Amino acid sequence: MKTQWLDDPQAMRHAGPELLSLALMDSRNLLLQRLAQDESRAALRLAVHAGWYQERWIARHVQRQRGEACDASAPQLSGIEPRVDAWLAQAQPDDTAAASPALDASTVRAYLAETLDITLELLAGTPATDAPLHYYRQSLLHEDRLAETLAERLRAGAPPSRGECEPIWLPGQRWQLGTPAGQGGLVPHNERWAHEVAVPEFEIDAQAVNWARFVEFAHDGGYDRAELWSSAGWAWVQSQGRRAPQGVEQLRGAVLVQRGPASGGAMRRAPGAQPVMHVSRFEAEAWCRWAGRRLPTEPEWELAAAQGAGRGFVWGDVFEWVAGSARAWPGAGVAAPGALDAVPAPDSPGGPWGVLRGASFATRSRWRHAKARRFVPLALDSAFCGFRSCAL
Image (tube, rainbow, N blue to C red; front, side):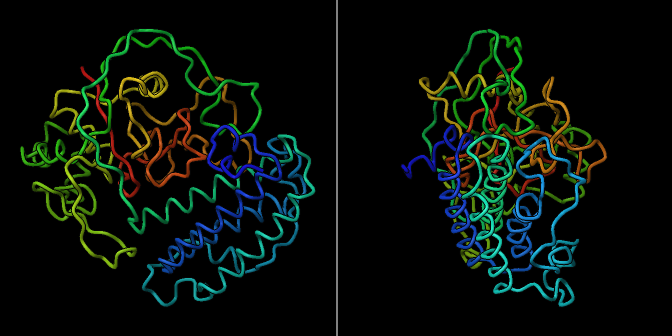
């Protein structure tokens, strides 16, 4: 088995039992490393989700070999930890003694070890076809995302600084947006299915907007000018008292950012050439109005990611906001049980919802796929998310 396949997005979407076994162990090791840096109750609950998802959709799931065709209402086998539902219930603040009293680091690690052992044992006897492997692949994606969320909590690491590069122009053309059907493997619900769209000619930034460009917006009163914000965005700014992206202590020359538990709360400078991050879509839209530009559409972003690499287009430093709302592609149908990327209901908490494209520096290489999308609330600013712009 070639371990480099662990970082190959195409190989991982079609991974068989042997590669999945290696990947699940690799993913668990990273999760435990992150957990060692942050053992708050919130972090412990995130980690518990990794074991719970494997139990729910693999160990306790009598129809797991049917994959997406399973009946989610079918009876479940008994779980190994009767307290897990209480652990995952809506909790009180981390510093409240009554919050999840039975949840501690050693208990969580024991639960994670036992659930992974069961998962790997069942995987060893699983046929190497898509349906029986579906929930193992989903579990891997789920756990890698949990590790990424822990990195965001820790504010661990930073994207690279990049020299300024001129925007690129792409001609009008037709483009297959989304992932084609019939290729097999794991295809998240919000990538289904490829459909042709017309994309007029457009100019797009070659890289994500950096701190130096964003500081100019803030210095020009960007957070105090209602005309730059949508009505929802301005209400958000006022309610938050926001005058800078999340975690930023000052906006001058070099940006000072407050780091999380990974550094004991120490400060670090974010170089001007580093992509701005921890911004909501409200902030991204306001910057674009200030700069006389706009956010790219999803077809523009995806097309540029596919065709612009040879001309300097770089993605994957930070997740990137795009225009439009969270929606399924035509023909996607109803999301299968346990799907991680289903379209949120209109009344889902935290809405309205938008779309992030690409990946961040903390995303595992095996999930850096140009077709990938994530649905998140417009006000989200805890993720490693930034943006780029297009000409009007």
